[in-house]
Length: 386
Ligand code: PMP
Image 1 (cartoon, helix red, strand yellow):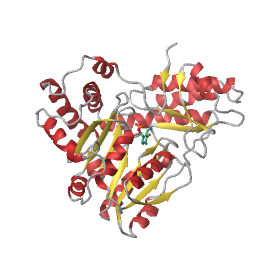
Image 2 (cartoon, rainbow, N blue to C red):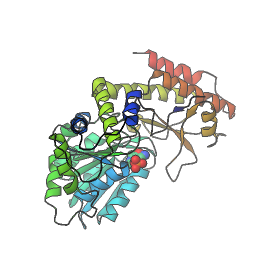
Image 3 (tube, rainbow, N blue to C red):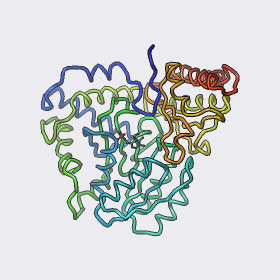
Image 4 (cartoon, helix red, strand yellow):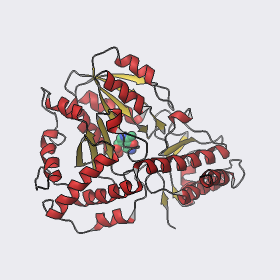
């Protein structure tokens, strides 16, 4: 039986992207590959709506993109404010501390995000060099109020680092217009490419902060001093080498970014919102409760849903038996109490119905009392209302 992969990354990928991945590898100095890499860098800027940013495309996962942002911006002793919405904000704090930052957290209870006002009042105390925020925390499905947060940071001269791993190319984000300094992500979610690429776009302010630093970057592989000449060479059509680029992944990235731009950023954001609304309607019709505490902090890229009374984590296996792969919980305090469904990249109305149908059948088999078809009907009524 064919399985549909509906976890919050990796996700289902387009055939053309997978073909690029399976093609014979080119030399990293082949003129054709240089053109591809240069175009992928330009497309990454366009997807992040960041014409003024410096893009970096490096072999690694999202965690490397996080480390690259921190390693280049933070010097030992710098103060950092972590807008903490869960598991991946904690990871960011760990990376900051490892690079010598003094970390202050602004927290909310699990399922909620700190308000812009609360973060702003912390920033106003002064002394912070960077503020980090997880755009969508994949552990809880919480969407942070990123626009207000990065604007507040910019107004106060604090560099903002936004972890977009579970958001980029799925959730609304205008890097230049909002004034975000670093947007970092990975290939395997809404960007639409199998795992293996760390992607970073850095504002002119971020690049200036890096140039002005006194302490050397404490990691050779993450150091923009190594990567900037490489990115500039590819953008300028010239061969260069620091560490072998993952040529097939970069070609696949170029294809996927091209598809994303052909759909159009606003259309893509709207599609993710519409499908997320259909999922939310289904969960509610099935009597399920979401982990995010309000619509305003609910992500459009995944659903984090509590198991109903009497149903446990074995639901994930039951859903798999129905042909759809979903994920269990991740937040350390709650992980046995909820499941997660990713809805990113090529997801369409058909995938929503297949997934809701599988979850519904699995719930009924697990003894949950709901009307068969209630979730499907609710999802369909959102999908049908254009
Ligand atoms: N940040 C967020 C928000 C994520 O969802 C993830 C991965 N799920 C990461 C960072 C880390 O990315 P990776 O697993 O690719 O290292």
